[in-house]
Image 1: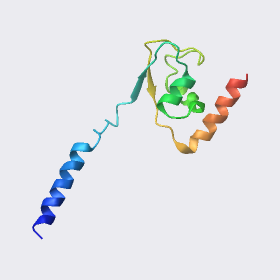
Image 2 (image 1 turned 60 degrees about the vertical axis):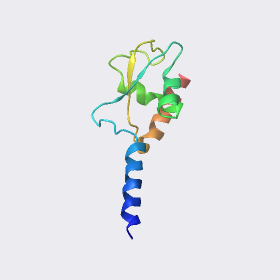
Image 3 (image 1 turned 45 degrees about the horizontal axis):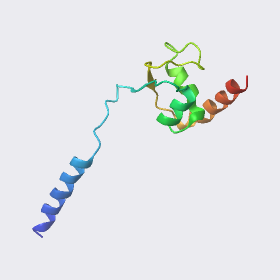
Length: 99
């Protein structure tokens, strides 16, 4: 039985070493726009679904006047997207894209 506490201690140490550092809940994720990027491309890279680009636009309306134009060097906040709202964002993207 003496081995069990040692094994648990070892496993706990490994978990601490391999765990990803926690992000500050108050600090938003940021993405610095690179040349040639669009909100569609940034949404694909950051949230894994390009059709959710309206969420990026809504979160950054203070610096994006036209959602079809983002500029290199802009730092965009990447919002957490509520899965319940994702379908509405996709419908909005489809509407705005077909105009």
